[in-house]
Image (tube, rainbow, N blue to C red):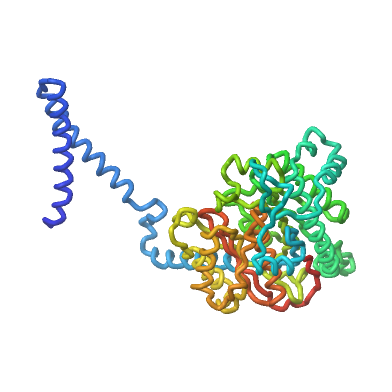
Length: 499
């Protein structure tokens, strides 16, 4: 009992003594003669008020939140009810973690080509970006960059100007810089491949859609099949955060135009997201995963990301902000460009099933405690936690993972963080099967982790093995997804891979 009184007694004594010392020193400094009321107020009431204030605050912050408290009438059944609620919440969370998407097609366009196998080979061989004479820094030296050959920005600008002519005040194609135009160009190539695959998927599912469609009864009791159920079709774009609202609106309008030209009979809903902290391609894919499982109708979803830093304007901006890679700034950005996308459906939907498909898990994401840019030693504990969680949710063993694909670039901190994860959690994965996408393609911005996921899907289909995709570009944010072979569908519907 005495031991419990010692600490509060010492604390209260310290408060009184501190207040007394401050007040007495102040009175001496101001040569003030305190009255009886001053002595009572400053030497008794003030320290007591401070003690009471502390006790009130302590009681407020130490008390349990209201949601934890149980009404007195239900305390008798609290244990059983609480256990049931906890079990139900856990089951729901586990069910949410197991949600998967079927990847019906994937496509990408990068400085190493638009064939996924060729890109994977180049990244696996650690082919670095090359000097581009057309791009120069402020001192006139050519820059290392991942540049897609054969893109004509002026031709696309003219095409956009003609297409968007009905609304020139809202869509000023002439104001687009070359890097914006190049990103839209790359995105267009990828989108057209995915739209062709979507058309094939809808045609192959046509008979099944008719069977599923609600019928109507006639007087004789016969059921007459109704019209085929129209699938829900959506395109989600992920564009750089540095783009203006007008520039994103131009890209959205252009995508809508391409979708109409590909198949006028299908209506695609197009939405656009801004790449920023917490809104990466993997986060967008996770959002699509949930949306697909909430949708009651058959649904196809295209996720598309694009970015480019190949323009004099972008180079000048990076150099002014101290972001450009140079001999004096080894950790700076190497300009790059790419677009990548996936055609997705709800996993297990027999309408769009494939004989040899690939499924994509939900994402696992979080924040490092320490910035990777300032950490002295690589810390892969968060990535390791994500890998364990994804493997557990997908009910697969670590030795079934044959590849790790990340958006790591040339920075040592990112490469060693992923390498440490592979060494500690997946030691059976060969060195050449650890692919660092941006180390070969340059800084891909909004398209970085989508490119990594597209390559992961390609490897999962090609080798019928699981592939871990990681996003480590940010200083703190980390995200992971798992791609793997789907179980044989019943009945199968063949859909070609757009790679």
